[in-house]
Image 1 (cartoon, protein in one colour):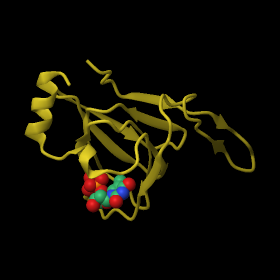
Image 2 (cartoon, rainbow, N blue to C red):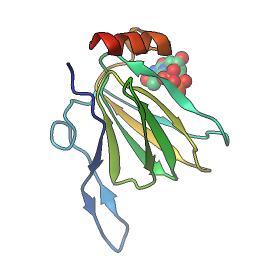
Image 3 (cartoon, rainbow, N blue to C red):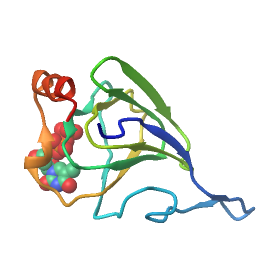
Image 4 (cartoon, rainbow, N blue to C red):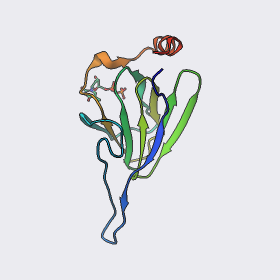
Length: 137
Ligand code: TYD
């Protein structure tokens, strides 16, 4: 069975009186090559984003500004990770159901993805996701 564990990664933080700096390198801080970057912003209060699983996509979710919760379901329970520092990234392997909620005002969620965009990689039906998990694929 594939690795299904989310991991909170502490990224390098170069502290400087002029302002702090954080970076991420593929295959060094995250175990995949970055094929795409997207970000979620201007989220109205109370809205959720996500709410699906990916068949192949691995990702790193970073709160560049503000805060939000990532709720991860691995098929037999959920885990909620609060992201509110831009030097933490939540690594999610493929095969997890996840959504984002509790966005603070002006929050920005950046997602580094291991794949180019294709709708075929999405599992948007929760029962289908659970069946996939039961079969261990
Ligand atoms: P989606 O991933 O479904 O967002 P959410 O799960 O939060 O609703 O993406 C929303 C729309 O944006 C959907 O029509 C697909 C499109 N989209 C792209 O075209 N390219 C991308 O890289 C992403 C992430 C989404």
